Image (cartoon, rainbow, N blue to C red; front, top):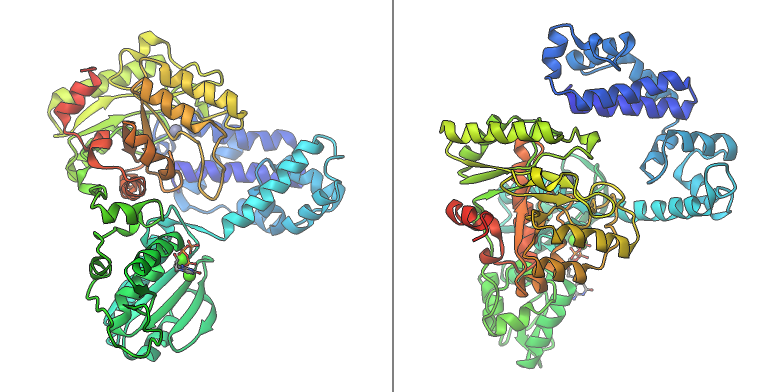
Length: 579
Ligand code: DGT
Ligand code: CA
Ligand code: CA
Ligand code: ZN
């Protein structure tokens, strides 16, 4: 088990012991141990091999043994027993924001809460507000937390949906009866979250396809099994529909079920204005009401044909949100789609110096393999102590190490020295100007006080945007999709400030963030706002996140010239030097 997983597990142990009301000193030892591991710079494997773990302050004898066992075997009997002794309903409560071990214990002991349902009930009855340490505000927060949790459970990250699609679609395509198969719906549109998956298949023999679909591995429930339409729920909770249509209908059905509803409405209006009627069955003269008669039917051998028949340029699925794409297609004014290959590097990446899993050299090597021209290192700053943020001394050392690595010529990629500097609660930065001046660039981000009121947060961000050393703002809203709401802020004021100060806003490509939201990008970019797509990488495979970033950028109508990191190295150097 690696260090990160061990840290999580120690914290979980501490929380479960809190719920059980065990000795506070013992509890504290687990949380303190987790924190110590977090800030430890040495490699855990080495420390254990050299028998030095027990010498580290904050890690006692009992903890040393447990960490060593976890590191070598990945298992711990003590933990398994603890898990078995805490009712699972109580562990579910940890998913409600604001509830930790101590509060759960109080709710359990004093109000008999043992599940989300019983917690909802006592909150609605107003009983929670009266408990010591709770109050009206907490009670309200718990209720809204539960409500969000339900809404969140109904959807899935696009990134996770992709993994499921990558399993099912190739399977469908290998069936001999299948002529064509695609995943439609919000997934195909590249929405950041997906409700259910919608598969569309062309075939004249649907029955075997339906049988295959409803008997795949990993199905929790078959909710419908028909001749041309079936629905399933998978073990992870994701649902999927499959529709089989005759080949000649395929591209009309694909277009229809790709949606969105708003896009479809606009397309149907466009068809009507030409005396045509568009549906999932096809495109035909309006007076031809009887769909079974094929008089005057228009054929489509591709989705492009559907658009062409309406006098429209092809609208990529990413753009089909009913936000003016049909009008733009009429005038041939659609944006040129951003491609993954357009990205030449990125700027928000973490190393082992803070909370990343890889060293500078490993990251440089990976960048070379991916063919990137440059890569920016932006580890956390000292205020992010839980992420082992760098103080001034460690940062200066890193700057020197990066310089040395660049000069060594060992790697093709050029590394830039940056920092992900915390924006403190009043908008001040975590480093003084003299330190910031040593860096090639600065990503400024909010990591605490995320629930400040709208005006305070707006002013805080604008102050950072106005700081001359700040190159870009990281993950603007702080949202975690399906887990944490965005901080409240006056987004248009912030965009205007970024424009006025020529500060870049990041499009954080972590599939859980995709922040700033694509819905704001189109207008902002039209006004000249510069975007930078960053993976916020904490491990090498996180560089893959850039693909999710590109999808979000497309939904925001961003073209290559709106995105800083499509530029070649020389231009980036010129840009960062301020000319
Ligand atoms: P989701 O699943 O909530 O993430 O979103 P979608 O867009 O995948 O929606 P879904 O699965 O309900 O339906 C897929 C597409 O089918 C949708 O984007 C457009 C089309 N569609 C479904 N129901 C309607 C409808 O009542 N009217 C229109 N115009 N289109 C519909
Ligand atoms: Ca869907
Ligand atoms: Ca659906
Ligand atoms: Zn961050």
